[in-house]
Image (cartoon, rainbow, N blue to C red; front, side, top):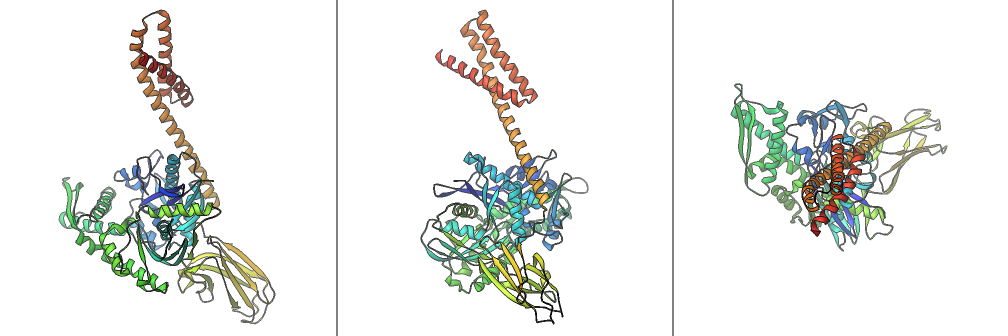
Length: 606
């Protein structure tokens, strides 16, 4: 059976997991870390640095190091969120050819799915290195409150990374799968997911392997990054008051502040006071160094972010109301996402739900584990588990006057079919345009356009007499089919509505090829470096052994000729190293390994 991995593509960190003999496990990277920073850097030579390697050099290369890219995925350049990110980000954001967001690094424009694909490709590589086999299939998670363009952009990223994306799975749902996997229970569970960039709350019912989502709500621009920003703003204000210098235009200093703010926040989850110390962060008019040194208490941090935590509680309140439940109907609360380690968050959740949140799931790993479980369910012909999901946003059509008519309500279980009958707006109308929208706004403009089509040759009659029935069919994978039929003539037209991608088919195809070529090039470089290193070590060991072997064998002409052959191979290896000749290096490596083995046997026997 083909292997499938689950990937939690996070704002701050990403994580991959798989199932082996029925047991879900997180996959560590080469350094042994189970989570990888969602950070991408491009060097001057065009090399990609992903994860810890990218994060380590961010301070010295801030304009070419991208973080928090998940907050930008599937958004238009003119959105308020993107415009806010332009002000705070050290890297350069530009408008793309499709009104999307692009990032310029070393003169080249990269799309957001392209950057996300680099992170996914790294997680694919981590899995392949650990498992020792090729990995092609994956389930990738997204915030439950992501809209269709954001989901499609994530799927595009998976395709660019060389993955067959079996499903885009909601993060809270994935966490619930990890929680209930292999257990027999009947419970209503709330999943409170506060990650680096997004917040979700989902309420689910788990009943003997059946996972039914009752409701989801959230904010796709609320997370740990906002907590960091509050600390940064405090540090900037304190530094300005003390030295009269504004660090906001110094991108290197801002990156140092960002790292310090994140570290301070993390520390204050376990201690009540921490010191932030940044020496030589700037210089005064005379060129003298200026230092930043401040003490921050947990109480001060909680005052800074109280409104952010309260926003999550308000969203939880709305979710409970939408689910038509009381707070005490919820049996368990799961905490997911790194920001839930903050004591204030845990207290607020416990106070709202009137129960102590469970801590038996690692908040950084639960989502990836659940994605791996879902992937395994999709591959198995028979599974003991069943996932019943819902649509997190309403679906409908735009109508005369710029209004939105809802056809499928938010939180409707999928698959689902719904219809509505409309009448014509003008006398003797010959066609109607069906505009398909997603969202909860009363006006069409406040919702997302998913697609549109025209039903022609309808019955010509006075306004209000021709009846048009519009059907919405949403399947379990979230694919929407919309059709319209003239109920008098039977004339019909339909479309399959797939989420709008801000990338053209050609752009995606080119990016897939670019990624494939880059991966092959990196594999070649890694193999070359491995063989160079191996040959170098073998040469050193053989050269050390030759004098001892000469002394043992004596200086006969025959022995000298044998030793000279060995030295000739050594010289050939040195020349291959100098020339970076892969073919010759691999050939010489074989000779050197055999020679080294003989020398070791000789040394052991003597």
